[in-house]
Image 1 (cartoon, rainbow, N blue to C red):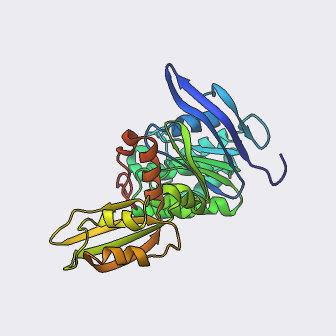
Image 2: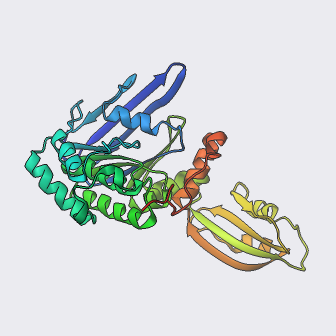
Image 3: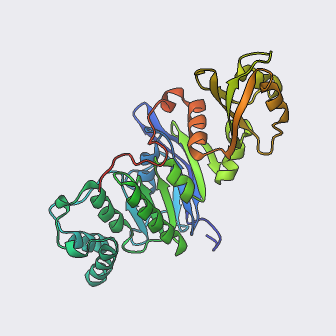
Amino acid sequence: MTEAGPLLAVQGIRKRFGDFEAVRGLSFEVRAGEVFGFLGPNGAGKTTSLRMLMNITRPDAGSVTFMGGPVMDRRLVGYLPEERGLFEDATLIDTLVYLGTLRGMSRADARAEGKRWLERLGFTERLTARLNTLSKGNQQKVQFLGAVIHRPALAVLDEPFSGLDPLNQELFLDLIGELRARGAAVLLSAHQLTLAERLCDRLLLIANGAELLSGTLDEIRLRAAGGASEEVKLELRRGAGGGSGDPVAAVARVAPGVECRAGEEREGLVTLDVALPAGSDLGPLLAELARAWRIERISTSALSLHEIYVRAVRGADPAAAAAPLAPAGEPEAHHA
């Protein structure tokens, strides 16, 4: 591997369980000093893929190389699994010492580093508290520290924000940003798409075990929804003019093929969402709408990762798209 090459390279991995193919030929690379988002609906194959990367299970086909070799060195890799795997009757500091030594640290170094991290995260008075006395959110903090205490070159984080309230989500954003700033690579799987959008340098969206979209957020925006990269939201009130009363049909007349959704009309007012290529001329669209509607408000914004995700998954698998997502900016569960 050259100095500029990928830290982690995944080529064509596949995994089958009986007649079900959970992962179908995934390929991607993760580079030092970046956060790589690995996103998809429940059952898309994310956790199975991460377990293959960590050599917990072996791929049926394809390859995984880390720093140019085929073996994941636990001294250089940190792994936060989706399921908690802590000994609940152990103390916080003993837990971190144990996990640090598993990753090649001496007991003295693991204790010093664990104490420093626990004090930073507000556990100064609870170093010898047992894990079963902590909330789920605080247990998640300890498990996260156990994954990064040894300063890994690669951190694989499967749903790190699970169980965290908004303040602790922000804390984790800062901690993951620090990993990136010191040159580590972070492979992040998460359902909180607004957090992933803020954090990730590049992304891979998958469904049914296969790639849907990949690249930077800007690159994905250009590929999503037929090249649409800008969302235009209009609030329309029925006017006295002639023309069709259907705003979606009006959009189709002047911008055929553009994705458009109208909310339910209430007391003559309707909200219209239109996905357009960035920099589109709104003049013809507004003129057509004005024949039957009075335009009360217009706002434009870049397509969010949430919107891109829903569109991409809905197009690949309508059943998967029906699965609930964590609301934008909200945790899956609220715990202190």
